[in-house]
Image 1 (cartoon, helix red, strand yellow):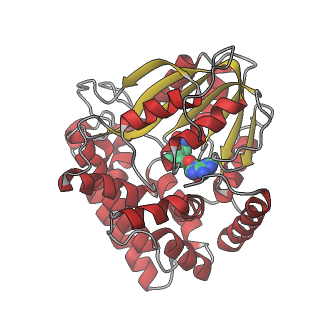
Image 2 (cartoon, rainbow, N blue to C red):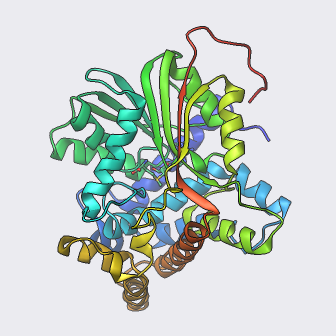
Image 3 (cartoon, rainbow, N blue to C red):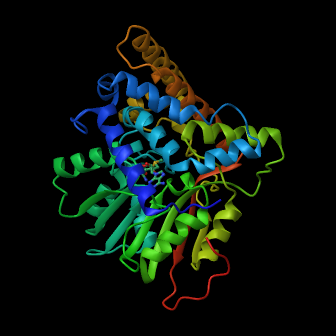
Length: 385
Ligand SMILES: C[S@@+](CC[C@H](N)C(=O)[O-])C[C@H]1O[C@@H](n2cnc3c(N)ncnc32)[C@H](O)[C@@H]1O
């Protein structure tokens, strides 16, 4: 499957996505979050966005269905984030990723520490020009810019999230260090050899082919530059021919808008194939942590660390998600929330079930840490994108 699209198709797609975003979210993007943003969406556009996201998710895991999801990765992910961003911000905050947890640590400090650790492993320094691939609403970029003094460009194919990220930069007075731009990480517009460092947090798993996104990252990094990633992968324990394993992977794909969950070795090989030297290769979820990374989704109150986390834990736990489901379904029935909102909550519920099952069985990790360097002198590639 070719992951490259020609320039006029790409310009047309951008235009269409930008127009649709305006229609769906209106002009006042950014200032509203969570439930208040949800209820102010355009009804028919929301219905269309939900349909676009869910059209590939009919329970089928055969090759043809998978191929369709891979081909439609851009539109499908764009639609997914159009409809889930408000729920993510409501339940989780403005950094859309998991973290390890130490005993006694608050949810917010664990999230920030996880971001600091990636910045540290990438060797990000004051004044570096850094690319954040798949930047969400900019939570990690804001934290890493404050932590290191670097400048970050966030790349994202979702217009709604970019508008929100820019809104927050202004709100927190970080415009001098941050910029957020629209683009597909499979076809980057940046000049080759532009960035000192590149990082990606739980985003490149949306790629239809990892060589595609890693190859683009390799291209835009300066020679000697470093790429650090928390990758979502199925671990070496995963067996795609085992229906129980495949069910877990499918739940994660469906509820997280991922065309295909790849195995860890696929990611490792892809990094090497595009020319990177891997310097760190470690699953941070495979640590026997007392408080597991997936605890906010478990509903197990024993893990709640501090009083300040009760609100977050309630919203993300099983019972809190049930409550959200009932609340959103009721709002949809009485016309307060747009049609399709409860379908989104149901898909997110499936994701949570798959993520916890994947975490408990160690078949899945959201924090496969790779740190890779672009050699100073490029070697011939062993395979093409
Ligand atoms: C789980 S979110 C993580 C966001 C961010 N890294 C964070 O930790 O807050 C995945 C992000 O990848 C972005 N993304 C997915 N596919 C993309 C693509 N083809 N090009 C650019 N960004 C993409 C999504 O829009 C979303 O912002």
